[in-house]
Length: 458
Ligand code: FCB
Image (cartoon, rainbow, N blue to C red; front, top):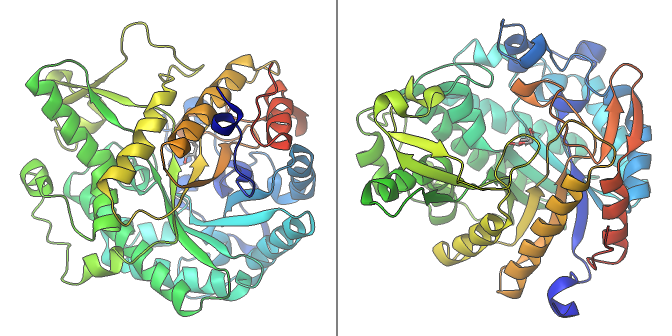
């Protein structure tokens, strides 16, 4: 490959990403209220090993050390999330200044290190008090989210100019309210579709509030997890299974956001589960307001096969039977967690977005990473990063406007229902001592960033 195809343009943003509940710990510190994840972690069998984010990486107390790590990496940006229950312990009403102070210290210190804060307002830790009133099934939660966004912006808007409303509304709605694998652990069809709609509405309402108080240079976007779906075979049945899965995972979110319309096949595909009575006139205008950027998280492609009820993906079928089974293609290379490694899926995603959405804003890859058991000599992760960065660069050469890349994750951390066994960090964390140790991939990425994308080799 020539240099033009491998090197990244000047100004391309390099960073790492984390999320509050996965790293902060200190769940009772300084007036933080409980979130749905605190509750869910106490449900027997919900999280591997009965673990929780109670201590996690103790980032709440060790954040300075973590900023130093980012500095050593040469990162120019850091994507982290604010814990809504630190800022508004009951989800609405009372504002907890001590929670805001923590993020103020963090953001200001990042700036001192010339690291641009990219703040996610919601990375899955809904205040439990709001879940008790219906959570995302309830339209009111979207309004409360917009209020919270305004409070956060009011307090931090002078130091934070990059705002991401939601992380992966697919996971918050379908994995949390239909599959029950994530908090709040519900298994509902209609409720999950309502949650998806209200998350999108919350995004739209929050975006309008942030824009109304816009400061120079401010940008607002949303992060979606995109998994292109490919039919497991050439059969028409598998092609239709892939369409249904694509609708559930991708188009359910991208079409309203980027076209201001629900996909035409929503009614046909989910009509037996829901009458969509949660939709109101005017919602799509709010949801479809222009974005400054789209955050794309990419981990893997989905290979979809049509399946009768008994063989369909079990987590999903209890809430609604999509008639789909996800399969791992024969001979596929997989990550330490068994996820298929298909960097071409990232290229496919980026090109697909460009083709489908004329109003597509610039893209940031807001997450991409590799999970394993935590080995320090993590050549698997280096190979993963190298191949996915090459796929991004190739998509850029094909005309896709990608502005930055955030590796998931800076640190090993609490990997949701998988607990602490799955490790995604560039930096190893010994949870007993909280010692941080840079892995081989940290050094590799540091070199890669320093050379603006010229592969340093192994
Ligand atoms: C994404 C989540 C992130 C992390 C990675 C591995 O879906 O946004 O918090 O768990 O997966």
